[in-house]
Length: 338
Image (tube, rainbow, N blue to C red; front, side, top):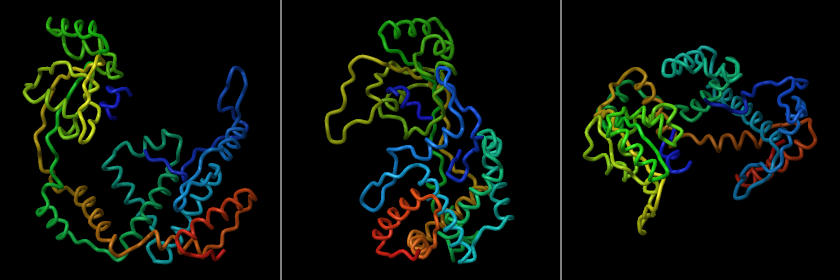
């Protein structure tokens, strides 16, 4: 979460993994009027005002068509993977799921809690694997190449200095004075945040998070420059936390809100060890980098679309697909085969 965004005013879901709703099931009630699943899906299918950018323009297409077009794209990509002999096998999908679960232990639980099935997650992983294998077709990166890259590019694997912060936000001078008095009396910063802060983080005692020092606004970095662990900054005008104009005069803060930070911990810069997970992710990144100069998936998919025989049974969507393909293929300099 971007906590700066809150102060200044303010898993992975694709079209392949939509939870099913019984057409007769009531999905909402508005002042006693029921909305059932059939009405919900019909409205979602033909909702106006949405669309997709094609070539240099924007064309309006209903969500139902866009979902269908996404499914067609997925089938074409799987077909391309089969043609090239890189369609992901079941063991590859399961191995990828295990690897991702090791990195994010709650991956499957969170996915299932969202109303989606394990099969839908496996399908998504199969699709992403197919994309990766097509983008890296013919590319091999050895363990030695990974280890050499790690040794020669330490900056890529170095975690920058990080600060663990708490914050209190107020909007009035009276609020600032009340916070100052409570802290001067020796009251715990987190307790004061729960009682006095006007930011959403008050519920968790003003927790701001542990952030790389480089992502903090200059005003915050300056305020924290001489602050010791366990101490606080003075009040900072929230207006000064906004991005400043390039080449122009900086924003002059006028009035509140204001924020005050507690520096809880400083984590020094450190080089990540080359663990199996880091080695795996580095290999994939190097393969993708090298694949950019060899494989053109956009071109391959455009050719797949051009020669595909697509028979859409719903008249409105068939006509929409014809318009979409005409604009798409013209932009690619191709002609449809279907």
